[in-house]
Amino acid sequence: MTEYALEMKNIVKEFPGVRALDGVNIQIRKGEIHALVGENGAGKSTLMKILSGLYPVGTYDGEIRLGNSLCRFKNIKESERSGIAIIHQELSLVRELDVMENIFLGNEIHKWGVIRHEKAFMKAREALQRVNLSVSPDQIVRYLGVGEQQLVEIAKALLKEADILILDEPTAALSEQESGKLLGILKSLREKGVTCIYISHRLKEVLSIADRLTVLRDGKTVCTLDNAGITEADLIAHMVGRELSHGDDGEERTVGEVILEVQDWSVYDEATRRHVSQVSFSLRAGEIMGIAGLVGAGRTELVMSLFGAWGIRTSGRVLLRGKDLSLVNPEDAIRAGISLVSEDRKRFGLVLIQDVKNNISLASLEKISRRGVLDANKEVRYAEQYAADLKIKTPSVEQVVMNLSGGNQQKIVLAKWLMTEPAVFILDEPTRGIDVGAKYEICRIINELAKRGVGIIIVSSELAELIGLCDRILVMHEGTVAGEVNGRGATQEAIMHLATGNRN
Image (cartoon, rainbow, N blue to C red; front, side, top):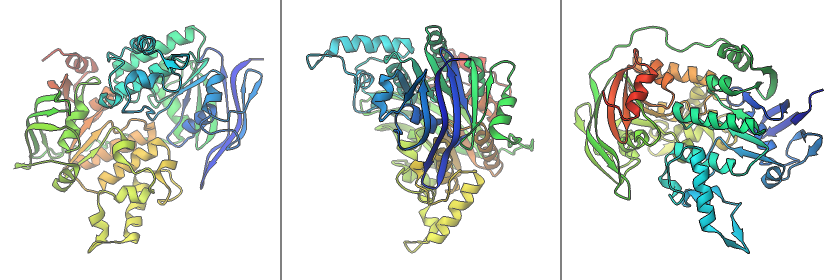
């Protein structure tokens, strides 16, 4: 009989109007990398929040066993004392503190009540080196990109020397090169006997590292599989339970006139550091253009500044349909016909304490108002239409957004900007934290928008995604455009060649 490091038996968890987990069972062997996969809303993150003590005993039914011991965690500290550490899908850093302070937050190195800054600095630097992050421990977190912040989270968890390490979408904000480095770290931890529970929507990544896999669907355990001869198609069949279409029916898209021109665009932060340097490009109506690059290349800073949402100072010109734009803030961009799905949905995309319908209509209030009075019935109709089109899993459009899964939250952000009917649609990491079924749906929507003549810009760390979707791909390196490749004929090697600083 196999002795398991961890068993979770008949776990049931309910939220208002939703049964998130319905009798889930999972068994983890000591020293294995065990993948937990499923669509958004399947219950993966909820299950791990129970294990990590975020949802304490009494808020769920079922039992947790570590070896032969029954565990009833009242909080995160109790879970950590039992040897469990979790890296959450959503960042939990304090942006105003520096990297070192975040790494040791709650676990400060001290002697007689006095924090030992020098020792903490050295240990933080060692932890950052383990995840190949080249930033100083005294760097303020708010100046780091999302990908860099994710690496800080991973360094923080590794320092806890946990017996069981839970990673919830740890590579979602990382490039494929950086993801490969992280997977190497996990393999070395496995060799040291650390048990890893790995949650990811990147199925190729899962199959490359997992010893076994458990599939959840609609809050229930579908199966547990040994990773031997399993294909992505096999996993998708278990996860989704339906056939998927890429959303591209093969119909040729007609690319029209130039709709957006960016000329010699440079962007500076509040410390007068230049993040984007003299970038120029044009975008045609009906064209899908990708932007690739490593973390820190300036991709997000570029698109955020074009939307009027980032940068203390900019220079250069932005023209929409030949007309000069002065984009001081996002309101100017929205009025001009530019929309942006940002990479950080919780910070920039959603009002978490409001409901689904309020979030979807937030950028289009003029559509559902007359003489300044909101038409509540019209708001509900629009919200229900987009919820159905994007397959948003919610009991109703009056459900509070913070109660939904990360993937469904991302779909709500997408719905909000679709409702504005933009001329230029910018999507920064649109499929981050999105399950495989939703990715196909989003690809379908992107292709449909392009066929209607919308100009689309996609920033993504998933090179295969860019190659499959885009007509052409700009590659950035250290704030500049290193080169351009044809989307349909591009290779990941060619993109990486440019992303690492090698010019055409």
